[in-house]
Length: 277
Image (cartoon, rainbow, N blue to C red):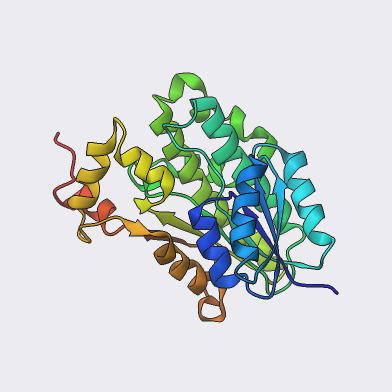
């Protein structure tokens, strides 16, 4: 029997929270670079009544992305995409961050956009970090949004001499995600589908807990202590936003980014988190 298909990348807490919220009744194809991670989440979800198939999948590889799509098409039309895959500034070098978070996301949105069913929806997870760096020029933004995917990593602004460190690479990748969603949403719209971006702040996950207890822990604790919410967020709160964007209540929302960071970005520009000059 054919089912509507949801593609999910990244077997983490955010991906699972969103898939549990909107994936009922669908065939869920869950891809992660470490198949054992996908298998762990698959068992949790299948034991709760979902229908999930785990796959090994590398976001930095077009071939791997196409394999994920092909697996989904075995079961029916692809109607939902949740992209929660990526690496953080403390997890990977500059080259890997750009290859996975920037290039890989662009390829995924492009390839799924070619097959997404009418009425389909997608969300990708970027980050509040994309809002922290100085504004780019209109020309730079357009290059990030519209450069052919195989040429993205050749852009001058993304060359090693122009990237300060892994955090800067991550910020550029997340800025690119947001611009790419805007451009790709126009193409998705031609198929009667919608695409949006969610930019979370500090969300409590196993990885975040490791960060809280690591060398950058004081930085993160200071950030959520001095944001208006006064706390970190939860994966379920991100799923609340995804449910809006991917459901009928969000039918007029496409090409947008929703920032969900407890006001940390606002505090960074206009409050106690503002950097000293």
